[in-house]
Image 1 (tube, rainbow, N blue to C red):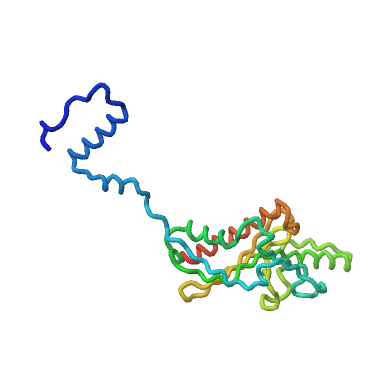
Image 2 (image 1 turned 180 degrees about the vertical axis):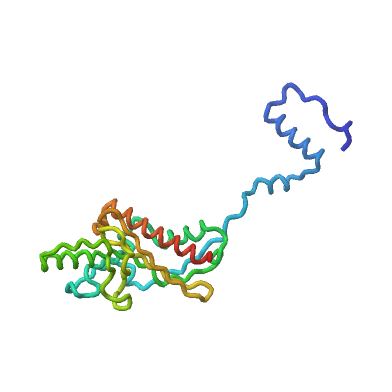
Length: 225
């Protein structure tokens, strides 16, 4: 198209939208831009490939379970939070965390999740209180000794000395999964600034959600290493 083919005037009856359309077509004709090129320019950049999480947790882990037995029992007072007692979907939450991290080891792959446990463990608080009453002495130690049993002796919710940093029961989150044939195990201890034992309350639910978020970020950091 040469300059003589380009209209120099537009009818007064032409509407504003028609003028705009005509101007775009005219620009395309002069510059050689095609409609397909314009369409591509409007397409947003691709997002990170979706992460597929295979939920392979045992059925017993999906239900709430409260530790019972004598005070000397390794699972004494430890509460495992089931899916129905959470304010969020732990599987969807983990998937969102992995996808939000951007391209990484998990992008577009399957993650075989075999463990995602959330535990409230006030056992040591209770034990120290009972000891104080029995010995007529208040334990003023600022260092939590952690679980008195080994991790292998407990069904879940173990934590080590100094991992709990407040006077309230810690929330322990354990996440285990397999990716590309490699097993990963994440252990995270969250120390709330309030009592989380009444886990159905809004405040306690917020503590639990924060603990889960921290653990999921630990998963992301492990994969990005």
